[in-house]
Length: 299
Image 1 (cartoon, rainbow, N blue to C red):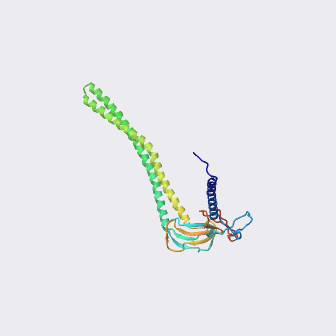
Image 2: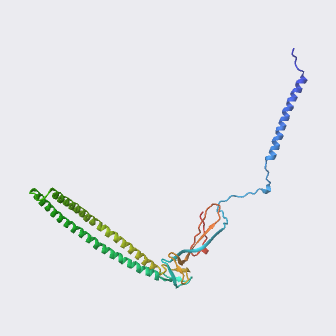
Image 3: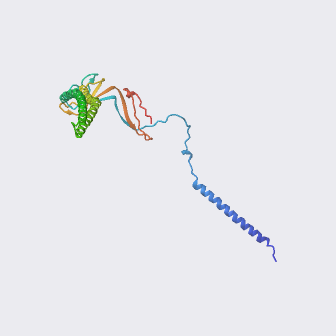
């Protein structure tokens, strides 16, 4: 039979449960305190700086490099293969439009020019000769065609005579067959001549036009060489300063080889690069008074 527990035992068990709960709460509080001490950052008051935020431009120094070059620079090249014969101006001299800088030996090009002129004249004579030849061939074909027509008429008459004589026993059947074959051959030859006449008429203009195109090509080559010889005088086409010239007299220069440089020293520009955070390059430009102008760079 069940009996109630004594009050002392009940109090001991209750005190024991409260003790366990208190120990757990103390352990949780101690853990929270220790964790807070470990993770919390501390800043001394002497290390704290307070300032008022303002808006404006942020200035920074960048490392840049570049060079000042003329705003305009003209390079004069040799239009022909020649040799330097005489240098008229030295580097640093001011040049005017139309002023000659140096003289080239153009003797080889002049010989080539005479050769092209002779070739052009031969081409023109060939065209005239071709016209006469084609005209003669056309006339000969027409005459041959007319002669063949007369021959056919004669052979037709002979065939009729052979047939009449055959009726009276003066010719055989073989004579008639031979006369008919001869007439057919003559008619085929006449058709061939007529085709030749038509072909000559159609090809005549084509052949003449082809020869005239060859003459035109020779003329263009002659004009091109004449233009190169004119450019070989090497004159300035605008004012400036001669910054460089090939002053080696007697040396041979090839076509397209540089002979002189002319610069306009009234205005300049700056080309350079700067180290900036973004992977961009910039070009700095300024007028002749660049010393008093602050270059700006747009990234």
